[in-house]
Image (cartoon, rainbow, N blue to C red; front, side, top):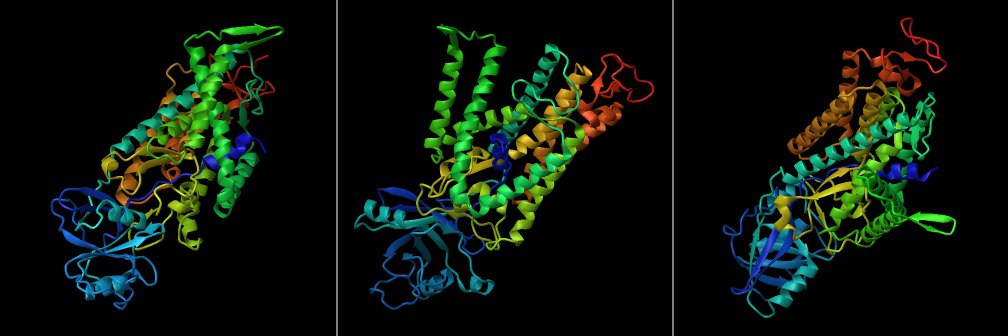
Length: 535
């Protein structure tokens, strides 16, 4: 199996992370202030939405106790105070009821483990009347260090994060740009091949540059089956295979970035500055570009878990990877486009919506693989978030998504950066159809690129609808559920309205005449009576 296929197996993992339930613990001694991350359940605990309206509580340290019962506590007055205890030993609701009985007004549960949105049975919800939240144990140790032997006051508040964030518009623009440029590049490469000389038809052609054309329905089906197998293997053997994918991504993205930059240099007419050494010559430009691309890929590989800034480099490499993929892997005709996109739509929906009923933790296989096992969460009544006990993630994430920080939460990232994300598969899969549309424009000599422009607009509208449904439903969506119908139907309706559907369906199995646009079969026989026989 080629490296391109293995890369594709990892690329088509897509998801969108749901809304978080995070709050802020503001600690002060009158002169010094510091804030820390909290995780709470909004349907269970009522917390103020601003610091100015938050009630002040004296903070009491009981982290030596699990507070599963009132025994073993040192004599202390907890009335109207915020009490911090250790996680474990019993349910959250039991700790809260004991704290209530002792007169506490707030319960903070310090955790050495990853913090998941606290939950309980429906009957337990009604018994707990005080706010309850989880915080990192390491943060509480920092509180003791910063406010050593001083009286501390605590305030809890949860700044509202709007459902809509500007990052969604940035993501939309980035995705549409990538799809449009990838389709344009594929069409431009097709025009160069035409200008270079006649190309034999039949659908099995390979360009001299190594471009690969998918032309067989059986191979497309096998490709999708391998995708399913790879995703399941990633689910069960994630901690080993994730490093294989990371290495492959570094190699593939460096190669893709080189291809993109080299094409840009050729377009602007930059000289290659060849240097001859004996009988061999090498291009100084190529060496410099290769050095830059390898360096960027290595930097990403080393600092891939630095959320504060590495997303910029990941998106750059991701855009290059998607562009090169759409230019390199071509679909020979619309029939193959329909088969591939339809199968991947079913694949996407199944692994997002159906697999939660089959997995032990109720999490979809696609979400768990794409975000990593440490970013999952647990199935609950409301939205669920998991925050690592150590801000430095202990798990690896697959480099299969574009990431844009949520600008509305930029100042609230105590628990970790929040991102709007879009899988590479949501760009590449429809992008292959957009690329085919542009190549068809080239074959038919369309000067206005009607198929390419229409399909790109359809992709933009489909992605906008995806984001709208996601915001309204407050849950992640399999984007191909919307993108595939929008792009396939738009291109098919356009071909029918222009009376070119037969040519559009058959693609490279026809040769299109410049004058009549009537296709001929590869052996020279007329496709239909009115066609002109060509020698």
